[in-house]
Length: 619
Image (cartoon, rainbow, N blue to C red; front, side, top):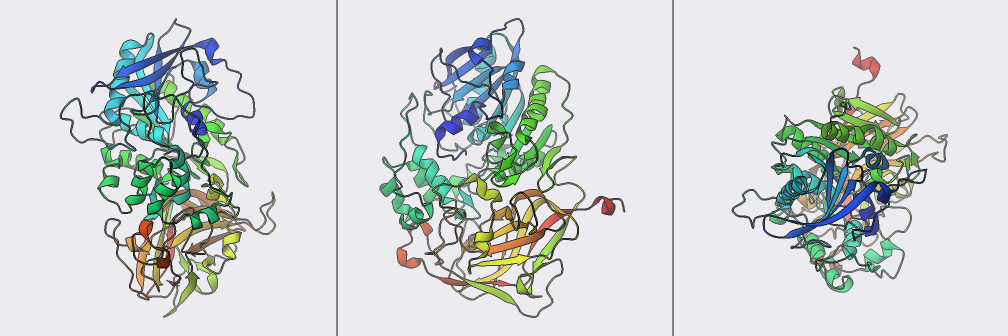
């Protein structure tokens, strides 16, 4: 879900707007004619759709459809946007572009349901979901829009990616190609709402200040800026009170969408029915799944969508593209850097011109095949594109990095009979997730410098010696920890970090780049449906998997792992008392002593897939 604090940016993404080093001079109105339609669905609800058709009617053109809940402004048949399509080159190549307000949003009729569940059975025309709306829309477009070729493609980012996934389910025969980009797939299991049981507080609070129920049909209104009363999000969220009371205190009028996020703290029926992944089977269109290694919102959904189709629909022609991008960064930027980290080229422009456009041209226009590898993936650290016949690469083998005494991270398992490291976690003085004060989830946090966190006494640090050769990690990162707490619940947040040498150039001397990090709420160690308290002081095992990385820790760098029990306000605070967090009283938030064990009978480590070097691969 595109949880950005300014919906205008969301709209720009949905309409294919992007920033480049050169001004965009393509005149949409000079080359395209705009039409506005109210397309009837099978239950009689009409969905508002804007269509931009080439003025050159000497040929027939395929349709590229985007469905979005963020509005398709500008409204009015004589009003044109500055950009159409995923890029200017798409517009120049001539497609028919169709944009649709999702059911119950802006100018479309009906009732909007946040992340509407996909139905298993349709008993009557009243049984609708995003799959049927996509089918009915495509059916109407190919029958009513002049000069269309009868072939349709669908694409979209974030919420639009979810709608693209939905279009693949029992898809219309005219749908030939689709590109779900950063699709939200399973909101509780690692997408926008919860990560391993921990609620993503700042992102959701900011998003639902703007994303509210609408009276439709409704033209877009200027959204009111929430009154935080401070620019310091750390202070604001500490003082905001219980999440259960936040709807009354901060949402005017109240927002049921926010309440749904806060109230459903376990993986219950609400979330399970919204998991689109089990429905991605028997898919006939070609699929290009796109995401960013530094996507703070739907990295999990991207990778899980690719794997679900691969496993459940093996006959589908499917490709994965992963670049060094933030959420939607492949649409709206050159893709040359994020925060302090540069990637050596305009990677997003390369994607739009050399991957995305050839993919759609081939499947919708019959152009030569793009000759794409199964996985077109960007290796960060070395800053190079790789073409892999599978993901993860076949030459990547599991390897463990063990927590050892004196803060060492070693490839050798500990031999000590006993050993642990400990810290005191105080939920009233949580570890900040970002060095600078901020009210939102900063996209730069995904590769930000972690030296500020290492200085805190409530953060444990383990690191290797200087690397004598490059170490490339390809695939998921899986922590396996033995822990105990003096409380009855605690979070254990794990961060994988690339430590730059002290003589690194470009202002990166000693930089500690976050490569991947995830929280884990301890009470869910055995089940996300049925949480269990800790027994104070009793050793427990916590195992989980973080989203994939493709990163080279270069010779002369170090590999670091940090462990902490708060990451604020990226995630909500764990009271460290076994309770329902949203309704927890202030006196439930207590200090706890956390231990990480590192002995031969209680081994803590992270497991990763390490790519074999060229020399090793040839043996």
